[in-house]
Image 1 (cartoon, rainbow, N blue to C red):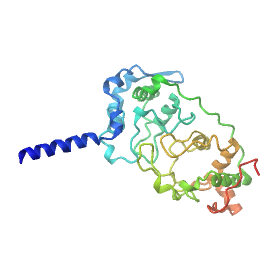
Image 2 (image 1 turned 180 degrees about the horizontal axis):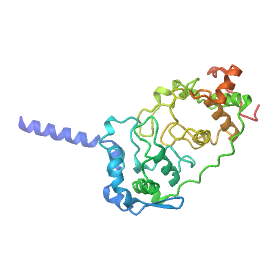
Image 3 (image 1 turned 30 degrees about the horizontal axis):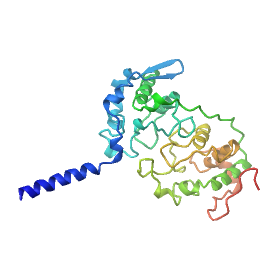
Image 4 (image 1 turned 90 degrees about the vertical axis):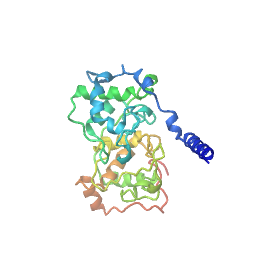
Length: 292
């Protein structure tokens, strides 16, 4: 009997070992990470040093992002959305094209801004030097920075004047690129695809609800919204539309999305005056600007 129990225990142990998630095999070791402890960041005239951020990271960040920067801190089971895995070197909020590394300034700004609707607060209490040091510390977790350079920030053209015609054109863009499938026809995050979305690690993720009054995670200015369309949010189902819409169309889309938001705006007033109705998912998609 004991022999059978021992064999059964060994078999269960082997089965558990063989069914470990594949991601765990790729996790970087402490030794590998420490080879990059000399990582630096450059923000304006400030140089950040990874080695100088160790204490701040352990005090303020390790609970969520973990000792190895893999997002598996002790708070992981209770945090939703899950903390970023710095080892992957993949970030939502960037000024750079999709698939490329963010700039040091992008990470620097994210630390100060925080991530609305998440457990990532605004770390505005850090000095600029401390933030720059933390940027370097974040970078030292991933070998991507040792082998790649950040992408070149995209160019954001001057913001045009808001007009009724632009808001109507923005509704056409919203319909044509099918934003409604995730965000819903009224921006309430209840589109037909919303319940099926997952991030790049297979975890459920929700589209942004424009109507609930929260800030978009990567900034809430018109320029921030434009940047999100054109860079995408890497690691999520939100793609870059840089190859699908023109700069003028991106501004039109910004203006139309403002009509969904709770905050008072010129766009909401103009939409009300127009009697603008939501897109009809069953209608033929409007042609792209300049096409028949």
